[in-house]
Image (cartoon, rainbow, N blue to C red; front, top):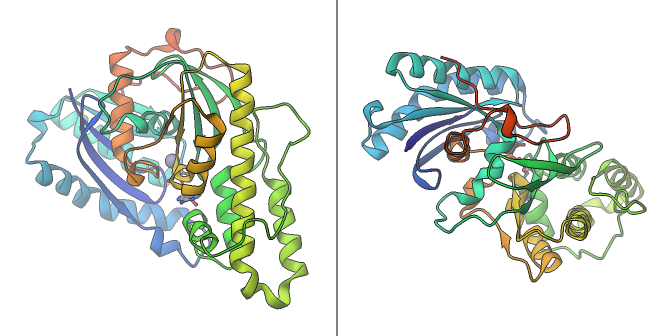
Length: 339
Ligand code: KG4
Ligand code: ZN
């Protein structure tokens, strides 16, 4: 089954064509992150305007790169949320129009289910369920216990900022460009991770939840204290701050594994999963269990291939509200047909 995926939830305009949920025939991503490098974050109106400009050229590239036409496409999957309203509308309106014109079924995909599906892209091995998935991006930090591709339980979540947000806000405080994750990771390469000791949120609790607001505040106070020689300490601060974020993520996964010993493998997905230090630390934390990461870094951050994959698994598992067992407000919604 060949699915055309569309992802426009934030500042990436992406269209992918994926066969059977795994085989990525193309994954075009037009990112406007450089436009927002100096503004410290995405400006929603500007992001939506760029989505309008880019969506049709990106669609054209996806079809011409693969030599496919809409005759070859079996269904269209599109991110239906959450995300920036203006940006989402560009993707969902484009998907609806294409579905109507070419008579293709339309699958509305929750953005998080897209990230959860990203580890299967360009991997042909059989999924091992149950698995624990650490899903960490600019908008969410969650731990899912999953029984299948579309069926799972949210066992932990952030109580304030997301991990990616902690990277982005920390970078802005340190005078590093947006997006903060890659900037901090780069600065940390030459820094000493033990130079500063930052607090690990919720360390007194036995929980799978996260909290990054205390850590962020601690960075702010440390920066104030060392304002006069901040430049020379930037790398050490970045390395120590990154270490504190990764430490908390690992500790919560370790705790989740004590609660769910039946888990066969651990996954890490979302933009923050591109972080090399996090991958290293997680692999140690969960050993001897295998850590499944995305095949390519471009599948960590927002992309349409993961949306096409999620659309395929929703179709394959015939997802409807009765088969979903998510117990919190962050439920992954069932397949929606807009046409
Ligand atoms: O999944 P994503 O592309 O978009 C959302 O759904 O939010 O994640 C973006 C987030 C940003 O906060 C960015 O700083 C973070 O992922 N990120 C990283 C790295 N690359 C991107 N964080 C840490 N290390 C990285 N290498
Ligand atoms: Zn995302």
